[in-house]
Image 1 (cartoon, rainbow, N blue to C red):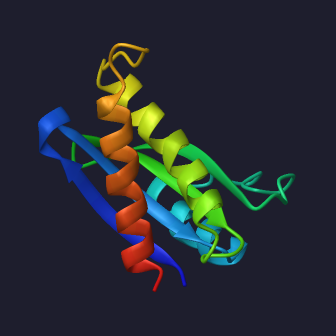
Image 2: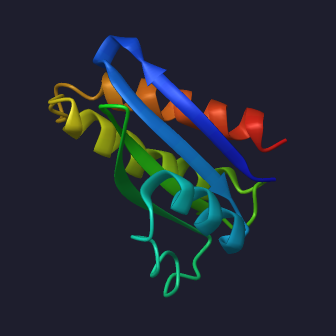
Length: 123
């Protein structure tokens, strides 16, 4: 199953797009509509259980982070969680949230949220 989801996290004023699936052609096509031709090397060298690549997309004056996530087996919760951590770390870094030993709840809650979105939409 392939998904495209526009997401907003009001608590961080973060706007991002998840494009996820296992079909490289779908990912490249949807990503090209969002960020243009800057996607030629998308997933060409990565054949692991999953991979994530991030891009910036500005449309109508609003910049969003676009995450292209390839999950080979959508029932693989480990790969999905792994890729969600990459996205969450990127989002929190972009919003200036510092993650360390004393402050990691933001990361765990955001990973949970992202995995729930992916699992719900990849059914």
